[in-house]
Amino acid sequence: MSVNDLIKEGVSLFKSNNFDQAIAKFNQALDEIEDKNSQLEEQNSIQFWLGRCYLEQALKVRDITEAKGLFAQAIEHHQEQLKLAKQLTDEQTGIQKQINAQSWLGHCYVELAMKVKDIREAKDLFAQAVKRYQEELKLAEQLTDEQTRIQQQIYAQHWLGRCYFEQAMKAKDIAKAKDLFAKAVKYHQEELNLTEQLTDEQTRTQEQVNAQFWLGRCYLEQ
Image (tube, rainbow, N blue to C red; front, side, top):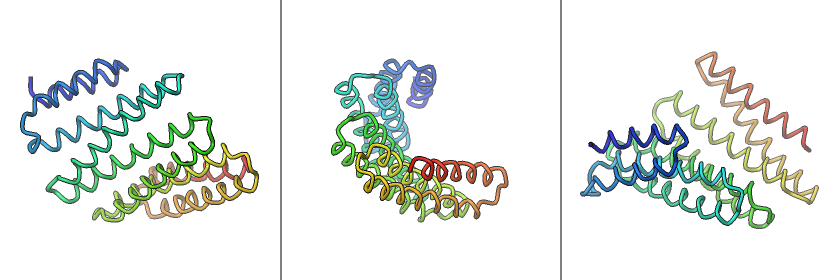
């Protein structure tokens, strides 16, 4: 069975929530690639899906120690995905793949930050997430296709806003929470501003609704 066929089987298992079997299939696909300097896009895809598998497992478990272990594995695979993306020869494809990796690394840190109870630990994790989304934003600005560039910037601004929103929701100090909500508003407002540049009417409307919703949440929760 070819590497791509194994990846397809793994994706099918992932979509059926058979994460352990999917992990085994993706690892099998990775083992089929003897020369790790070849088939970089396939390796990138495998690392992406392995990261997704561990993230989904981490989200489902209640035990925080077990969850942390799964998040760590997810992060490890998405970091490997990022390394591989930087090696791709086509510049724009490489940027897109790096954006994807940074985005999922950000998601890992956000989700873990929301799970942990310790405020200081959560703060550090949110900071890691912000770092990833800021990198995603920088990468998005390098995309040559205008609409794709705007869409990716919208996603990055959205998640930067979410980082500060979720952190504000955890904050016990009112003054600190207000400061965090203000930062969240800033990013969601920028998200909203960017939607004006989308040419597809339906996409623009959907993104505007989403941005307005989160702006509303920010003001409501303060």
